Length: 242
Image (cartoon, rainbow, N blue to C red; front, side, top):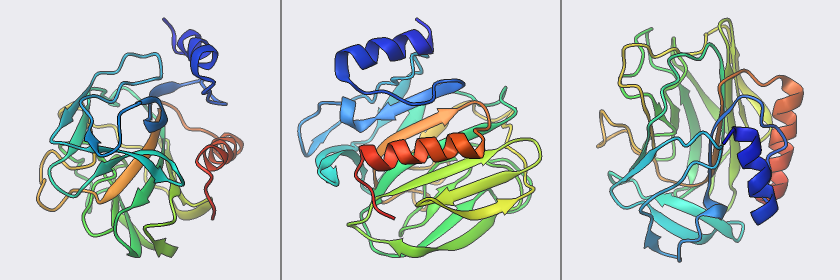
């Protein structure tokens, strides 16, 4: 079944819909899990229609009222992570959107990409300890910034990273926080999968303290109007505030 036909079926049975489906590669939505509160999840199925296989490692836990009264999956800062068997090596551009809430409070530091030009060997998404948001999926010199408002345990956020061959932009809570000429990361020759919640390489340090509600990945660059549409959709769906 194609992504679009699967999406139509999902709308009919659950009422859940995405406003943009072109280029959709992955969709993880905690509101579709139906797992009891405080229960470790055993799977997090891809709802994109692309049948991307995911494997739960450790014991990330369902929290049914974690994000403004709505469900999320808690990655506790231990070795809990999700392996996503999807290589982005053939993509020349990509857009990642994440809705999450921190389980710690403090300064929010975004680290995007590795220092230097060597790609990550594990292609990890959203992994770092002590409130940092560490997205290793974009190549090039690491961009690091402290975002306005920081991280709090009561204020979920939308994180967006989008890049093509010549540029990248990172948005946090609806505002651009990084914009530069670093290209989309094409991780040819690496392991060929993504990890969410903790790095496959350095679990001790590179592990997140977040409750993740939704992850959407497009294998193309969404333009500014499309990003605004998706941010508005996610903000409404999860009752977010700036």
